[in-house]
Structure formats: C-alpha cells, structure tokens
Image 1: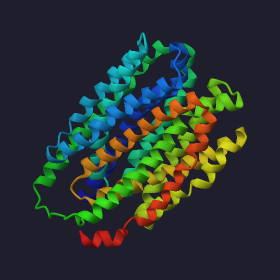
Image 2 (image 1 turned 180 degrees about the vertical axis):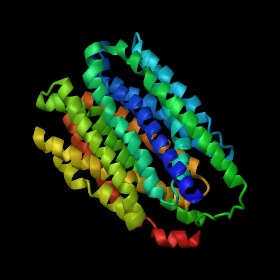
Image 3 (image 1 turned 30 degrees about the horizontal axis):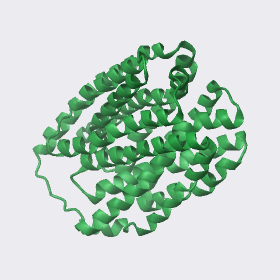
Length: 395
C-alpha cells in the first residue's frame, strides 16, 4: 500500500511539473505569436524580429547549462518559483514597451525565466519517472508543447483584438505557475531527503571519448531540429500571409495546428524510445521528416497545413529520445545535460532565427523555407550514434 501511495504522489508531481511547463511555455509562445503585432506597432523588419528571438534564446542558452551544472552539485528546488518572476517581469516589459529596446529587455527577462525553469524542472521530471525516463520526459515536454499551442490561440482570440497593453492581463499565467511550483519544490525537497538517507550506488559514465562523441552528435541533431522548428514557429504566420494572403487570425489558427501536432508528437516519442530504443526514434523522427519538409515550400495552402502537422508530429518525437539518451550517457548530471540541451541547442535556434530573419529581409520568406527544408537531412548523423545497449553495459 505504501508503494502504491508513493507512486501516486510521484505521478501527481509529474503531472504538476508538466502543468507548470504548460503555463511557462504558454507565456513564452504568447509573446512569439505576437511578433506580427510588434512588427506593425513598432515598424520592425524581419531582422529586428529575429533579434527578439535571439535575445530570448541567447539569455536562456547562456544561463541554462550553468544553472543545471550548479544545481547538480547544490540542489535548490525553490529556485523554480523564484525564477518564474523573471517571466512575470518580462511580460510586463512587453506589455508596456514604448519602443523596440524595451521589447528586447522583455525578451531577455523571458529568456532568464526559461533558463531558471528548465534544468531544475527537467530534473524533477527525471525524479518522478519511476524508471520510465522517456515517458516521464515526454509527459513533461508535452506540457510545454501544449502551452506553446495555447499561446497563439490567446494571441489570436484576445491580444490581437485588444492591443499590446492587454498582455498585462496575462501576467496571471506566470503568477499561477509560481504557486504551482511551490508545491513541486516541497515534493522535490522531500524526495532528496529520502534519497540522501539511502546508500547510493555510484554509476560510472561511459568512457570519455565515447560519450563525448555521442553527446556532440546528439547536440548537432537537437540543434538542427531546433533551428528548423524555430523557422516554422517564428515565421509560419508571415509565410502564410505573404504566400497565400490569409488573415492574421487565420494564420494563428494554422500555427495552433502545427504546435498542437508538436505537442502530440512529443508525448509519442518518449514511450516509443523506452520500448523500441532511443536511436530508432531519433532515426525516424529527424530523417523521417525530410520528404515532408522538402515538399512544403512547393505546395498549396491545404497541403501546407497538412504537411506542417506531419512535420510537427514526427520531428517533435525526437526531443525526449535525444534528451534521455544524453542523460543516460552521463549519469548523475541530469541538470547539466538538460541545461545544455534546453539552453545551448535552443540558443543556436535563436541565432538561426536572427540569421533567417536577415535572409528573409534580403530575399524572401519563401527562400528561407526552401533552405530550411534540407535541415532534417542532418538526421543521417544518427548512424554514428553508439548502440544504446552496449553503452548501458559499459556503465
């Protein structure tokens, strides 16, 4: 009975951290969905919009690995609700920004909130996995992806109609998230006390040359996935408006379909990796997108929506597989690995967004989509990843 009760508490903690991830990413992607509004209000070009993403992604990417590494050695569960206040301030800066500089400041605060949230929350999901690490990461990440899909809906249904200042009303999202994270922090503190009272068996990582090479390959795969996802998420509304002449509200609806598919795909990848092996999931989810991505720039509106759904679902399934594969390569460094992949890989996505925005200004959004369509071919590097069973046998 005690074991069943503990499992229920653990699953409840996993659901709550997934809910917190949903609230956190709803706030983050609500801002991204408002780029067309900022473009009109402040007469921005695509380069300046790209630098908004760059400011957000880079502030997150620089801090996340450092925070993850530090909390691996010095756990601070209550950093989670504290970090959410950075997101709250970022919201308020965005809502009342009088010019482009203040939008950049708001983006930096949002990135800092993300940097504090992701490494420690990913560790909580790992602790609440009951040994099903891929499934736990999928549930956790699916919460974030659901939030990413909800953000554009809020933008389309309310903020676009009521203007930039109405963003201040949605500061309640990070505020609600901070209260949720207080309960999570208490549970994580109790778990660490129980673990510290048991005799721990130290797990050795794989030999350095092997896991370093594997981590580098996983990092490249994650970065290619992230840059392509950023190109779709950040510029999809502009692509639809420019190429097919749809309204801003309609383009947000198509973005919701894409991000909803990403949420479903994220959940599917984790359990599949637990059962079939993470390497197989990475093969299918990155390289398997290539036929759809290569066709996307050359089809009509209906098929663009259909292909975007397929791309979002299939590619998103790689996230949990890549992250858990990396965490299994370097046991005992869950926070540092999560910070590395959430941070630096996402930072490269921000650099990609800035460069793609500049390219769109010089040429066109259509050309950006044609170039990005080749990114899933990076999935061929999966061939060089080590066999998962052999790597586990070396631990």
